[in-house]
Image (cartoon, rainbow, N blue to C red):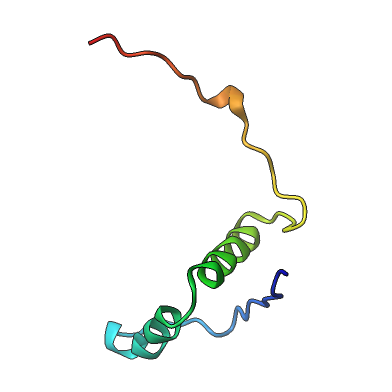
Length: 69
C-alpha cells in the first residue's frame, strides 16, 4: 500500500545543521521501506513522472563490455 505524500514547496528555507535535528531524528525513526517510499515520491516530483507509471531506463544509453585483465 503506497502512502500518499504531498510536497509543501513553501516549507523550505536555509538553516544551520543544528536546526535540522528534529528532521534527522524523524527519518531515523522511520523504517527503510518508509524512507524509500518517500525518496521515490520526491524523485517523482523532481523528475515529473507518475508514481503508478515510472519511466523505463533507456538501455541504449548504456553499454557493457568485458575488461580483459
